[in-house]
Image (cartoon, rainbow, N blue to C red; front, side, top):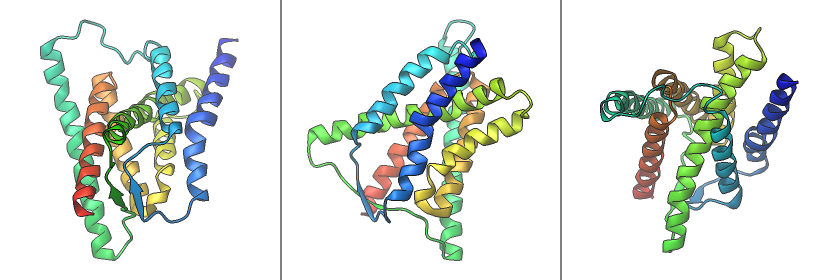
Length: 219
């Protein structure tokens, strides 16, 4: 009975949080510019991810067994910095490859928010989107696949979760897909090493904010 409940839960997460971003991108045309403003579904998925995290963090033991100490945070922050470095290197190498081989990078022009409310929307939306991706793709899916499909090797469980994340970035082209694939692996390794989502979350959030503002300066 418990396994049936977990299967229903996993199916719900897939239908609500994983499949829509993958499918809907194929119904939109080429995007040349995007406003740094998030729609209501992003906030919904972010709030759903918060509820999901509160439910599963103990199940998958991605918590410290002892108290959070300053020393522990400083030590594990090194893993977050390492993950951030990997994100930057992966993106830089793919941009270079795109320039060398004439491949469309999928990078779009960004338009700044034009009011304080929209700026708040941008910052909060970015944080919620990052949290949603860390909880769903880096915490929930790989652990749940391993739990529900024991015959599936751990490597395939990990790869399936990363692949779902990368498929949600197909709209950015081949390089965007590969970038998401590489970044997804780096962030998942960070979670496995720290037994927490917070260090990968910090690395991912800083990377996303940096990317947005870099593109904004280029616009």
